[in-house]
Image 1 (cartoon, rainbow, N blue to C red):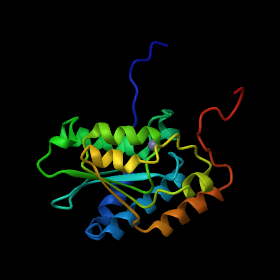
Image 2: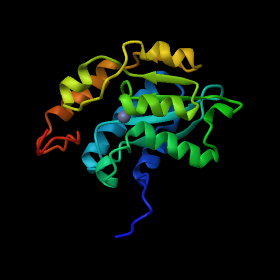
Image 3: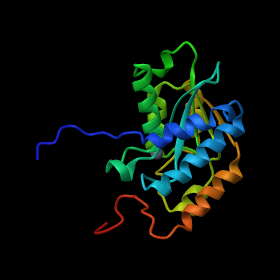
Image 4: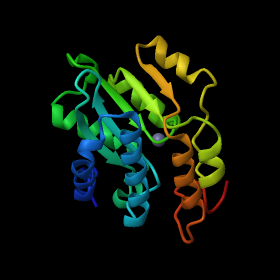
Length: 197
Ligand SMILES: [Zn+2]
């Protein structure tokens, strides 16, 4: 099989949830409520893990894209919510450099990015990162291995012009991970889960 094309497709229901929440997105809490709803629906739909992200213009507050983790839907291990959301945003705005925009973009995520998405955030050009929380709760409750994050991850982003804010509706995000952890028959798609070391 000489397959050369690969990719993911944002499910229609993500944009439907975004539209339904539009009037609630003017506040930090409203944005995080949408992220938590998208994360839970994503598990129910079977598309991927309980993870979601938003890109928001810092000046106008306009949301460009919402995205969810699509690892299970796509069969691609790199399609975490941040990568999906950044990619959809770049496709919609027609640029690989989100740092070139007159009104800078912030990336909102329902927890601190994993090791891969930390890098993807840097490469995208977003100028801000807002997360519900950054502690060990995600890994402890869900079983996902987020990879070797630096202790000074936030300072490293700040040093590259990406502002970092942690702690919006933290308890609600943790509750999503708790419910996911209690979900029977879930696929925790860490690689190396079967076979040899
Ligand atoms: Zn990730």
